[in-house]
Length: 97
Image 1 (spheres, rainbow, N blue to C red):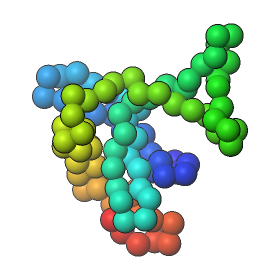
Image 2: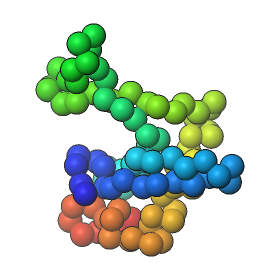
Image 3: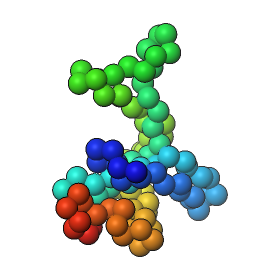
């Protein structure tokens, strides 16, 4: 599944035994990262609220206490995805991560 920078959907199990569904590994150029689960932004009627370009807007379900911790978590998600599915993080021209 590729959509924009999104390269797929990962299920992440943490040491605490919590499982996060819908974590997304992304790639843009040579930058690779993972985003925590998110949900669409809804208006007061429950309809999806698009951005000015008509794309669905998302809001984070989980936040991190610091950018450093979010970066560490992202590396924790990307590393096993890269190891198990190296082509998943290849760019659109077939270059690996």
